[in-house]
Length: 48
Image (cartoon, rainbow, N blue to C red; front, side, top):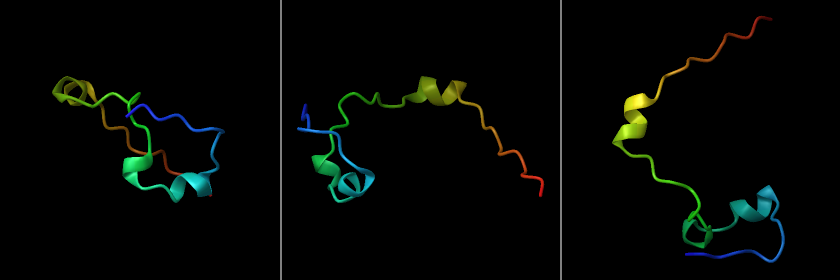
């Protein structure tokens, strides 16, 4: 799917689209090589 939209969408407009209506063609799939190099980074605690 190579769908382009007429104008930029707001978050509310994007949230109303189904997954099939969203153009994800420019997002690469994550393969085993990516996960092999991925590092888990825990969040830093927020001091109050």
